[in-house]
Image (tube, rainbow, N blue to C red; front, side, top):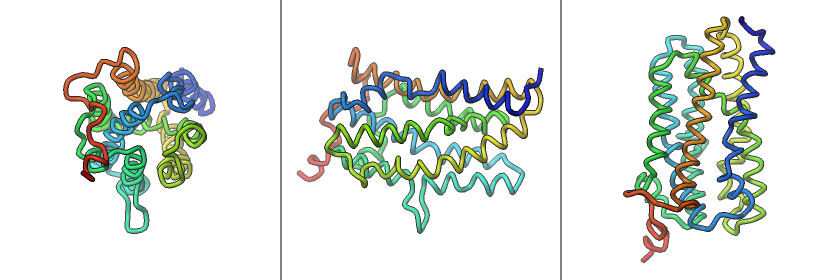
Amino acid sequence: MTQSREEFEARLRKIGAERYHDLHSCHDLLHSGGCTPDQVRAWVINRYYYQHSIPMKDAAFMSRVEDPALRRAWRSRIEDHDGTDENEGGIRRWLRLAEAVGLDPDYVASRQGILPGTIFAVDAYVRYVREKTLLEAVASSLTELFAPKIHADRIKGLLKNYDFADDSALSYFRKRLTEAPKDVAFGLGWVLDHADTAEKQDAAAAALIFKTNVLWSQLDALWGAYVEPARIPPGAWIPGEGLLLQRAS
């Protein structure tokens, strides 16, 4: 049976409450100050692969959109990450964080040392958006509903517990506090407008679950490689590689 608009929005929000990656032990460790410097660096390196891929995901989506109004609305997402003349963009802000934790930003930008699990999860997300219906593609972005809280918690926890944390290093998260609500207001409204049958609502909910799995899988890979059992797979970043001091020397 088709749910009302209010019922369906509550269903989507319940998915986030139960499945969003703020519940992962990796974030508990990071925000509480329990990560070693190398564990923080591993997180920064691997999360960069996701940041790098988001504009390509959005470009793949836009290439399939015939409605100019939807393309115009979606275009700002690419600009938010890639930057403009007036806005340096999220990718550059993430590289500023990399530099703050002692990594060579050129090394991070090269995407060397990325965990296989990170690559598989992120590439699966890009492929999903490229191949699924527009409704499913937009619905998969709705993890942004839950992002402002994790960004606020991260800013608070990093500032409290890590010497590298300052306004410059954390500028990515501060900027997303204003960018994400704008994006999610449009995306949520679009999904609620277009998921007008039970089948479409089920597909949109499944898309959001898929995206939470993408985010969770990335943290599982990070935990297994650098926390417990700390078994780094071949080709992944080894602590000591790609540091700023190596470039300086």
